[in-house]
Length: 272
Image (cartoon, rainbow, N blue to C red; front, side, top):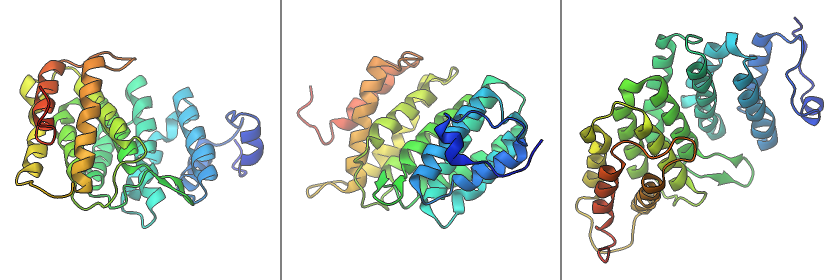
C-alpha cells in the first residue's frame, strides 16, 4: 500500500473513487486534516463527502476507531469549523458500525459519547452559515450525531433527548435559527424516539427541561433561545404527525405531540 499524499483535486474531478492501493491509515489522517480546513470546499465538498462515501462503502472499516477518536478530541478545538464537523464524522462512523456491528468497541463509542454530551449543549457558536467558513451547523450536525448515538447506545436515548432539549433552550446564544436548524433538530429527536424500547414517560420526559426553561417568562421581546425552542417544537410536532420517510412514525408519537402542543400553547394561546 502507498502512503503518498492524495491528489484531491484530481480525485474530486473523477467523482471521488477510493484511491486504489492507498493505506487506510494515511487516508484517515488526510481526511482528518481536511475536516478542520477553514476552506469550505476542502472541508465539506472534499473531506466530508469522501468520508461519508468511503465509510459507507467499507473502505475505512479498519480505521473507524481512529477517525472517531480524532473527531471526539476536536470538541474542544479552538476553531469552530473543527468542532462542528466532529459530530458529522462520528455520525458516519456510527452509521457504519450499526450497519456492520463489531467494527468499533463499545468503550470507544462511550468515549465519543462523553465528549459529545459535554460539547453539544454548550457550543457557543450556533450559526448555521458563515460567509467565509461556509456551513458550520453545530445544532444540525449535533442532532444527526445524537440520532446515530441512539441507534448504537439505545440505553442512552433518554439522556440524548435531554441533550437536545438543553441545546434548544441554551440561553447563551444571540443567534436565531435561520438555516432550518429547527427542522434538523426535530428530525434528530424523531430519530431518537424511533428507537424501540422507550417507555411513554421516557419519550416525553425530556420536555420537562423545556418547560423548566420557560418558567417565569412574561411580556417583552422573545429571546433568541425561546424563539429557537418554539420553532423546534413546531417542527417536531409536524415530524411526529407525518413521521420520517424512511422509518415512519415513532412509538408514543401521539402522546409526545400532545405534550409538545401543550408547551406551544404558552406563546400561542389562540390554539384550540
